[in-house]
Amino acid sequence: MQGTALINVNIITVDKDDRVLENAGMIYDTEGTIVAIDTSEKINLLAKEENIPLEDGMNTYVFPGLINTHTHLYQCLLKGLGSDLALENWWPSTIAPVGLALREKHVEAGVSLGLLEGIRSGVTTIADFMQFHPVKGFSQLEIEKAREIGVRMIYGRGFRDAGNDPRLVEKPEDVFMEIEYLKNKYENDDCMTQVWLAPAAVWGFTREGLQKIRNYASSTKTSIMMHMFETETDNLVCREKYNQDAIEFFKEINLLGPDLLAVHSVALEEHEIQIFKDFDVKVSHNPVSNMYLASGVAPIPEMLKAGICVGLGTDGAASHNDNDMIETLKTAALLHKVTYKDPAIINAYQVLQMATINAAKALNMEDKIGSLEVGKRADFFVFNPLKSVKSCPVLNPIATLVYSGDLNAVEKVVVNGKTVLDQGIFVNLDEKRILATAQEMALDLIKNAGL
Ligand SMILES: [Zn+2]
Image (tube, rainbow, N blue to C red; front, side, top):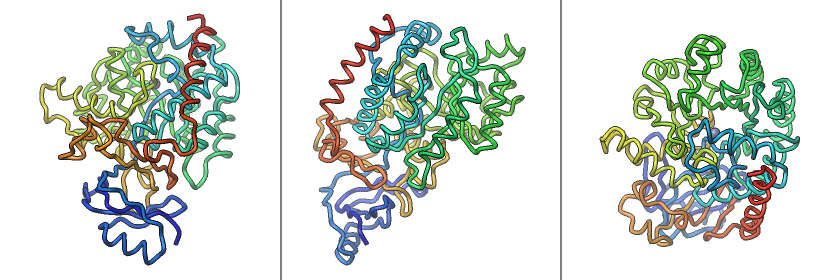
């Protein structure tokens, strides 16, 4: 057998028994499948028997790759723009003008930067909601960039079928055709690419448009990611347009289901949480963005209590100002502790689960990713606290990652068995050039947007 063996590591499996294996090792094959996890000694013997090259982890910590369930990668060019505004002002003043000015060169630069930052923060899977398509070709460009850089991507083809600006409005049928093309071209057994429907939000759609989305999703088994209940706006819009609360409207048009990832879910009350649970709707929780735009606090402890599957996300860098999942881990924990004035309301391990196995469940990919187990994809990162003043020393690796985690300690990142970051250096990428291009393209974009 060919593959790679990693020994002398501590493995935080996040499996169903929550095992943390000290002095352990693992082997993954060239196809990117984990074929063995055991004591370091046994892995050492097995690797020697099979002639598999050995890598000494030097007592570092191996975590499942983090899964970012929501971002807008192109927004990595917008860090620092549109600060200190509420969602309803931030959108028309910043996001919409930029969206219209976006061209391929900006998307390429922003996506590349965001993928790099994701990798540096231990991310191996990103669900990206690409919301603007003022010219054709962004979808292929972005998917190919993710494949080239080597990050697993759930690509959400964003769109809207209503709004004041016709340049931002698309016919659902045209989008469905593009999705079909993308699925045929890029979805295959390596699971590096998945294509989803990404309707903007209820305010960006007609009733008919959302009904078409549900029909297309069900008939083609295409999942849906959609901004929902980010603020009270969903309810206000639905009451005005449809004379009913948003949850009732979503129920009526059959939008709710296990293939729906409801991004944000901040403005949810108890009965809406119950309806989400009844329909097995998944939730993407984006605490930094919700705090940045002052949207509110998503009732995550209540959702977890109700048994709703919650995955963690950064949201775009226009409302997070970076794409750092490690920062998001800590923020998620602290936000709920202080909101409920209860330090035990959510613990470090629950937050890690939201960024790994529960994020995988939220993306309906738990049979492939989200934990380190035999048969799953080799998606992981190696955390070395000796590379970071912030993270050293380690007394509890999970607490260290969540509360003292640092990008400098993310020493190695492997996606689908392929090493993308090694010894803190990108294997096949010119990081300096990508950063310089991002700076240049950010200035070019805001100039073109007239900001
Ligand atoms: Zn978003």
